Length: 56
Image (cartoon, rainbow, N blue to C red; front, side):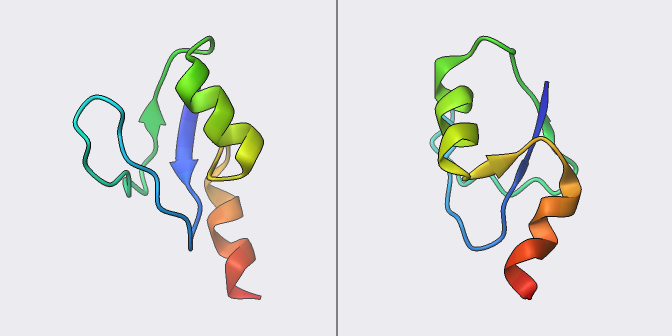
């Protein structure tokens, strides 16, 4: 699956420790527990369009 950062949230890449702010998205495993938790918490999204929801 591909995940995108959500504006206003800070997520660090679990491998590099760097802030994940790649607006082009990041391809990750569908079964990776780290990214599944980030999705459940609303820190990342599966669509790039959700980056705009914080602007309203």
